[in-house]
Image 1 (tube, rainbow over the protein chains, first blue to last red):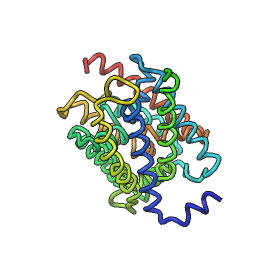
Image 2: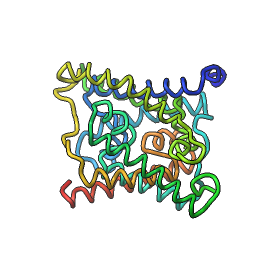
Image 3: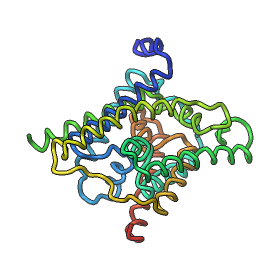
Length: 152
Length: 143
């Protein structure tokens, strides 16, 4: 039923709305708690903690609660995996985990929060990770061929 | 205002974040990879999501910053570095590569755990491992 409601809205409006919610989320976290809603940083601070663990854990709980609601109400939002090979999933996870921490941010930290503050570092980071992703798909396709980045 | 009550906005922020990802289509890896697939069938959804987020956050950030301090704290926790550094670029390249391979970045990956799939769990475990290694590397390199 909820899916029906949303199907009445043009897709790009849905996307803008989703983005606005992300912006609202960041705004709430910053306004009340003074923290940047950069998921890589929040998660990273849980994997190799240097204090400040509790708020990170609570934020992640919020993510999971929201995810649970989505899983119940609109499970189709999760789509289906583009990659099924375990080796590739592990490699991707390692690269994302390492890269976002080493680069001090991800799509939310740099792409949303950093760009909102007109941070030049975040602009460079955002263009770099988008560019690297796009280039990877081009290169993978050149070697593997066919549609999709090697998912087969 | 107890310490527990101060965590309520944190939970709400996390909850809204997941909803934003879901409604914005960012939990669907095919949509994300579709955005990065510039020369294939390009899917602009991610651009609209980011646009919507920036419209809200550019304004909200300035309003909040003008207060001088967060509601529940002494100071804003903002990044200190201003210069573009090698780790920023190298990290971003590695992230971008991994992101395009499975269509997950940290937010959607963690939120996806709620769907309970093996892929989600495996990815987050690997992401945790990568993050941990980066933490070690940064300590070694004094970053």
